[in-house]
Amino acid sequence: MVVCCWRVPLVSPPTLTLDETMAAGDDVTTQWPNAPMEGNGGSEFTPRAVITGACVGAVLSLCNLYAGLKTSWTLNMSIVAALVGAALWQGLASAKLARPWGLLENNINQTAASAAASMPSAGLVAAVPALALLTGQTLSWIELVCWTASVSLFGVAAAALLRHQLLVVDALPFPFGVAIGETLKEMYASTRVAAERLRMFLVGALVGSASVLVIKLADLGMLSARAAWAIKHSDRTVSLKNLGFALDPSPLMLAVGALVGPRIGTSLLLGTILSWGLLAPVALDASWTTPGPNADVLWYGALNRWMVWPAVAVTVSASLTGFLWKLPRVVMHFRESRRQDTTIKEDNNWLIVLACGSGLAAVIAQVLFFDIPPVAAVVAVVMTFVLAMVAARVSGETGVSPVGPMGKVTQLAFGAAMPQQPVVSLMAANVTAGAANQCADLMDDLKAGSMMGAKPRLQALAQTIGVIAGAMVACAAYLLLIHNPQTDLLSEQWPAPAAASWKAVAEVCQSGLASLPPGAKEAAILGICLGVIIASTEALAPKHIAKFLPSATSIGLAMLIPAPYSISAFAGGLIASAANRSAKSWTARFLVVTAAGIIAGESLAGFSGAIGEVLGSAFGGP
Image (cartoon, rainbow, N blue to C red; front, side, top):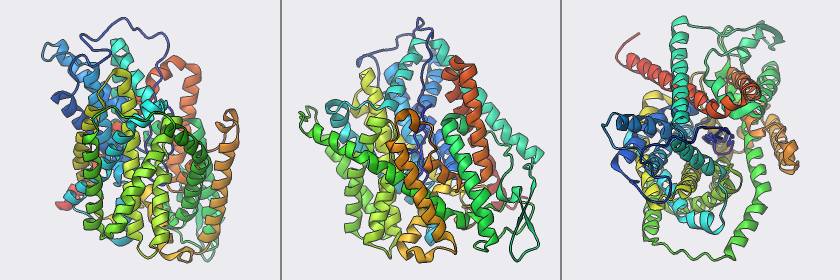
């Protein structure tokens, strides 16, 4: 598993990409019956492929919504959807109840599913809750569906327009797309491996869902200890439990840590020590922030309102600095590509219609829902296409998609041009981040499809259907979970770190640094310096050294989420590293799907429990 820290950045909803490496020695002798392995032979864009992808992706979008509101990270569910689709239809085919499930059908299935599952990243875990916190404005279900779908469809159009240039002319590698394509082909080369991976995913899902029930029934508390930090003007002391240095009984962050690896896990732990271990006691001692109301619980909400400022400073400065170091290479490749033959020998009328229609929809949505001036809305869409192109090129070269920095470029640009209108900068940035996320997602799918001879137009259509299905389900789920944004968000249950970050930047754009609470300005300056230094060192250091350096964006994320989450992620990274050393073959085959199953199982069970509590309160339950 390779972590895509910019696809799942700390200042916009992130996305982890399932980069699976098949272990040597897999049995490749058993073929799926009648599975077309190359070319366009066999069925491709079938109703069952599209419906399966849309439905599976819509369900998985609930997992990403749950995880995104807790951690700002989401998963690329392409491999999971491919496994589920193959298990369903090949099982029916074995029982003579359906025809065999072809490789190209499964590619359409995972393309639609990945689009649907990523819909929370179109604003539901960042800009939309940030808007509610900043202004109190909430959107109805139909408004949310129209908004997120229009933003995402523009990203689909951008990817379709860029496909020929990036995949054919420039021949960029798109490593995550290659990983998806190779995994799909290997699934059809070995039924045994596919079945074993699905089995491990289901085991992980069972463990994740069972943990929610066990924790609920046992009412497990967090382990804590007392510390001797004194708070000025108070006779109380600050315990490690107040600051969050405790054990989280949930396995979700253990699984996330296993996916992100020891480097990111260690960075999260460093960020936790820096923020909750050092900065928080200093802020409390200096009365820059106030302690929580109860001495026996985590003071996350009270401390987070101050900690968000150095956190945002670290994440934004590190993301933009890292991107600026990559920009010369992007410009160089762009100039080289212009000197090549860029003649497109395809019928692109449908691309023009898709781009114009989705761009117009994004402009209209900005004007209708947020009263953004039409000229500003058009500028936001034009900027989005340019920045999505940059993000796709970086993703194609490195496998790292700078979705977060692209959103911040738009937010800061509009904040500087229209400083007294934070809604404009916030939602214009939502257009950029949401579209760039879908653009990068479809480019990976198109790369995988090109390895199998899939038709790009059919993949774009599948992703369009997936976007609509995912938007309908994810938006309904968001409104059910976040009944009252002012009280539900930025809480221990729903930390919403991405929303906190976007809200903070909007406030700075509106009121300047004078709006910061006491001590936050100095902490933010230190955060900026830290982010620039770490990101620059990482960019300039040789690769064999850079991989051991801490991640500045992960350090910033640790400042935005409760400390137990980071501690668990660190532990998960250590467990995965140990497993890789002691059982490398098993880890290569099953680590990703097992961890993804744990996350999916706990997310779905936790989502169901949260919905039950909301409905119970609504109908007068306990």
